[in-house]
Amino acid sequence: DEWKAIEAKVKALPFTRADVRAFTRFFFSGASEMEIDKQGRIVLPLNLRDYAGIDKDLVIIGVGANRVEIWDSARWAEYVQQSAASYENIAENMEGLGF
Image (cartoon, rainbow, N blue to C red; front, side, top):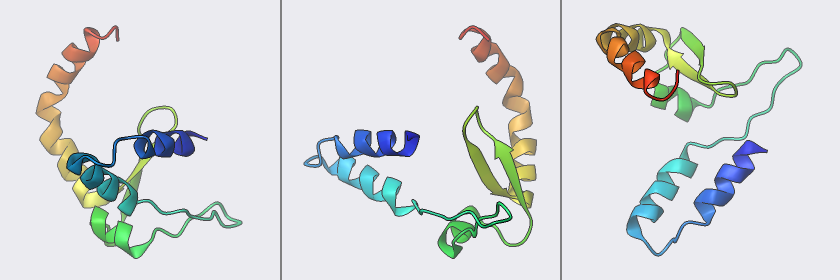
């Protein structure tokens, strides 16, 4: 399970370091185990909806082969608009990585 591997990696970090403790708090504070209902839905907890600024309409986007992100629709549209200018630079950088 990918989550368990990531969790183990974070737990293996030296907890005596202040930056590791801060990262661990931040990383795990947003984690929630969720159940999928019979119709394939999840209930997104209020704290995560608030964090993402999701009020009513949302967008689910694919990020890689095994990840999704959930965005407030208006915030996603704003992000796309603000990021449009940098797509050419991103494409050039990806070419250097073999894409």
